[in-house]
Structure formats: C-alpha cells, structure tokens
Length: 594
Image 1 (tube, rainbow, N blue to C red):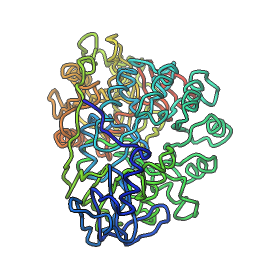
Image 2 (cartoon, helix red, strand yellow):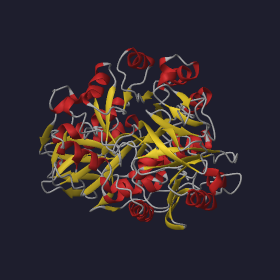
Image 3 (cartoon, helix red, strand yellow):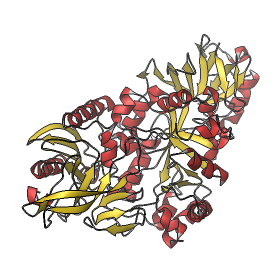
Image 4 (tube, rainbow, N blue to C red):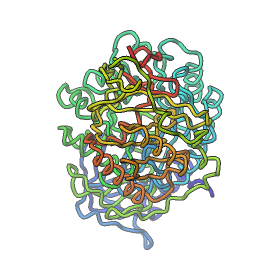
C-alpha cells in the first residue's frame, strides 16, 4: 500500500500555468460561489479552477478554464471557504486509528491535521509512531505528524512502556510526513536546561521544522520567559486571556482549544474580540476529541462555530482555522487558503455563522457531500505487537486496592477534578478509617494507577473527588495520558478489580461496572488506545459509556476525558502515576497522607 500521491507545486506548475492561462482545461471548476479570501479577509464572487489536486485559477471568471471533460460545480451562491486545519491534536484521543479518524472528520470539513501521536509513543515507542505516521500518509486529506518529544512526559515521576530519545527524534525528522516536534511537555526540563530536551529541540531546529509547546503553568515570570527562549513556537495550555496575550507577546502562537472537555476558547478569545490584538498569531485547535464528540458534534467546524458564538468575526475565526495554522508550520504556500498553487482543499457552506458543511473537496477530489463520506480511507495492517499491550502480571483482587490507615480518620491529599479544564486541584480531605482501611466518603472515591506495560503487578492507590459517583461502582481505562497504564476510579474495591481484569481480558479500552455488573465496554485493542472499527460504532459504545457513568451518579461534562487525564503528570496540580501521587506544582512525588 502506497502513500497518496501529492504532486509538488514545482512539478505541476506548468499545468497550473496552462490552466490559468486558458491553454489547458481544468479538471474541476467551481462557479457561482462567494469565495472567502483569508489573505485579505474579503468575500469575493469569484470562480475557482483545479488541476492536479491544486488550485490553478482563482478569479472573477473561470470560463476559459472549462473544457469538454471539466467537472463544473455550481456553488449557487454558497460560500466557498478553505478546508479546515486542526493545528494540534491527538488522533488516539478519538479512540480511532488515523484512517477511521479521517473518515469521521472529513464530512465536518477538516482537510489538514497536525497530529502528535505521543499516546502510542508511550506504549510502543518509535515503532508505534511509525505506524501512525504510515497510516496517516495514506489518507485522502493532509495529515502531518509531529514527532513526540516527551515519553515519559516527566522523567522520574512515571514509567512508560517505551521512551523517546533524541536519536529517535533526529531519525524521525527525515521521515516524509514529519512536520516538527510534538508538544514539549517537560517544561521544567526546558527551563532548567535538561540536555535531553534541548537535544530534541536542537535536532528539530536543525531540520528546519516547528517545535511544539506545552507550558502548563500559571507562572508567567522568568520560568515562562526561559521556556519561550528554549524554542517552543506555540502553546495550547492557556486557560485565560493573560495566558494568550503572554504567549503572542513572546512571538509564540497562542493555540486556543475546544476539545471534548477543554473549553479554553471563550476565556482567551477576548484578547482579539475585546483587546483588539492582531489575530494572525492566534490559532484554533481541538487537542483531544473522543469519538462521540466527532460523530455527534463535529470537529474543527465545531470549534469555528464556537469561536463565532463567543463574539469572533466569522472571517477571523476562519483565518485562525486555516491560513494562520498553515503559516505557523511553514506551509502558507502549500495549504490553508484558496489561492493558486495551494492544495485544492475547500468547503461549500450556506452560512458562515452556522457553518453547515455541505460539500468538501480535498486535494481536488470531492470527499464528502451532505455529511456523507465519499472517499476511501485506507488502513495499514496493524501488527500483533500493537494489539497485545495490556499486561497486568496477575489477576487483581479487591485487596490490591486497599489503602491502610490508623486511628479514626486520616488527613489525605485528594485529586480534585475541575469541569471542562485540564488542570486539577490539590485538595485536603479528612477521610474515615474503618477496620484499618482509609475509605472514600461523599464525593471522594478511590483512584488507582495499575501498571500494564511490563506486567509488574504494581498498583498505586489514592483518592479523587469531583465525579459525583455513588453506590458500588468502578470505571477503568487503559487510556491514561500520557503513560497509558490503567486508571481505575471507583467506590467499590471489588468492582475496581473486576473492571481492571476485564480490560486485561479484551486487550484494553474503557469499562464501567456497577455492583458486580458491567454496564458498558469500549474495546480499544490497538495499544489499548484505539479501535479500527468505524467511528459510528465506537461512538455508540462511547455514548453507552457516558450513560453508564451518569447512571453511577456522574454529572460532569465529558467526564471520561477528565478520567483519562488523571495520570498526566505535567499539568498541575495533583496527579497519580505508577510511582505514586505527584505534586505537579513542585514536580515531585508526594505522600498520600499528611
């Protein structure tokens, strides 16, 4: 199976010139539309001619480009906008392989994605990244891969299945689909001059590629300035207006995300809508969207609609989802706008505010119409090693989840979930001790991180608050950003053991149990992260999972995403890893009890 053929601008320039001049007929002409020019922020009643998968002519009248075999599309007054670009995202968070993710988002108008497969890197290392990269190159849209930078994300605070090294980064920079370095999550390492982090960034810079950022700290003092000096060119971890402003003032791009659970656009877009800052250095992205969001709500079209609903001018919102992204990655002459020579990616829509995605063209071909996929999204043959990644060492039992204590109560550190945001709170709770065991009470239940890469049998136990669970239940997931061991949250140790063992049985995924009975299961057999089943099938199971969580008392928006990030030891304030509780404000392990 070969990667799709994208003829370079240089190679097809003679044809593009001939078509624009009227000497050679175009493959496709779009007439009668209102073209959104993201270079000038204008709407123009222009025609478009396409040849060899690229725009050849964009101007007032393309009649001279039409031959007997030209496919003419009558836009009939529809708006013609560039295909949408997702500047920062993780395919694995969709619970789908690159092929199935592409199949899910193409009908929503996404024609370019910049993906960081650091999830699979933590499980399978460089070989896993290569598998994601290879399947991405086969798709009928443009999927660029950022080489993961941090596996583990915080050395010394977690153990991964595999590690990524500077040599791995240097090797990957020569791969055809690599666009840069994935988010540099180890921001303390950068600030403190860690040689490994600096070597990875240096290899990327020498290759002339973009270094992705991840500064998950509210400290905008010298540490932030030191991080910016290290080379990261963007950041998506901002949660307020000051964060966005600080980044663009340092010459970074502020990536504002709307994922399944991250609602960070509304709080930052005021830098543009109210403070009037230049929007060229602001970009929209999703970061993490699970399959249910993709199927039921959309992808980048959802983000653009949300930005407009937050008061952003529709043309500026479109710039932040097209040309701004392309420019950031050095691809302004390749994609992100409807202009000669660029990849012929466009959308026909009847409204710029509501943004219904009526027709999608990618690389000159109609790939979706009326919300239905019209293209083929090829799969690779995922090897057995990628489907056999859940190793517990032994079946787990209720005693594996016991937390011992003395006296009548114990003062404990508790992870506090914050709805719709990635950061957590570091709470202090007085919890009861019964028969020598510390118990959760009220809104506080147990959380465990179960080692699943090397079969050590290790279990780290702690407490979490905010989900609202009640009655005997448990939820387990082998999606556990970023180390991707197994997170188990529950009010019943017996159900926690049942849930963990179930995921070992099916090779990974997400399961919800209540009083000894399984309510929902999403099988994710590839690396314990993804399914190669169609998105609508995975989404249906994900919807059942959400319903099961609600049946157990959870009322949080997209609580699954909150669950899956409880082991992300690079975002404050308190997290859990296979080594224990992590104080992310200090980047050190901390004790459960005070």
